[in-house]
Image (cartoon, rainbow, N blue to C red; front, top):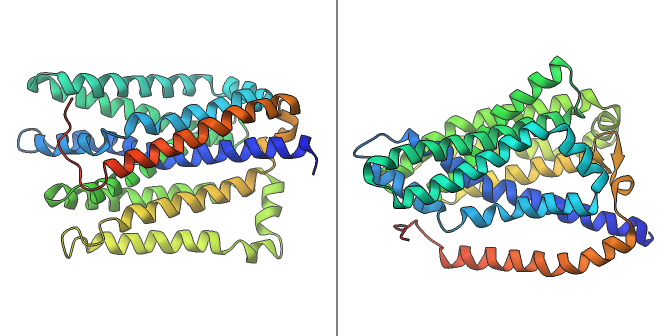
Length: 335
């Protein structure tokens, strides 16, 4: 392969990595935001404070990965950036408004009087819901190649609901790992409820993807691909069943194996993302532009790779350090 082939592949890989890490890391803190007001007023105020404390040291840094992914799309694949953001202008605006509302409500909550905390809790939840629904809707439109048919729009809304369920699930799994006592038990029930909605969304994408693209149909369902790729959906199905059984009996012993649901959620996200990447490769805009069609000039990519080679290790290093410092159960959050 020559440089004109290799550099777009490198940037496509980096963008995919940033999107995967964002979905996992910001996914759980978006999920905690969705779950927040479900705890009742009064005796559960301490539980809400602890839920916020569980994401406090990480949530804003988690969003760095979204900025990195969009930045790579803009500078490395400008043609694709124009098409994708042009088709998804309104949900992108809703996503940004949701993230801004989350940031404002999180910081104001920390300084608000006790009587006003509930209002900021609701604002944080609304911001989280706006962000997850917008992401799911954008993903549904992307799978359908930005078609404007009634079926495509209905699928986009189904995708929005199921992706919100996926974030709800991984957020509950995070709380199982980072808390204990009554809140941990409630988180196990929340996780079990949303698990099957998320699984339904994964199944819907598995059915729709081959139906809207003959190329994807051939990649998954031709012989011998259908046999070689069977472990991906089978492992996903096995994990869903295993996590459901685990959550049903959790906790037999308090905090014993409390990390298992979150690890299972991460594996489900990895398998789903792997399946999507395989389906759409080498297209960055489904059935319209390949990563090579949309890439910037090779000289520009070589120059930008120097900056990325500094930025990405710095973000990874900070992420690992912050999780190491705040390892263990969530403690009281102080400003």
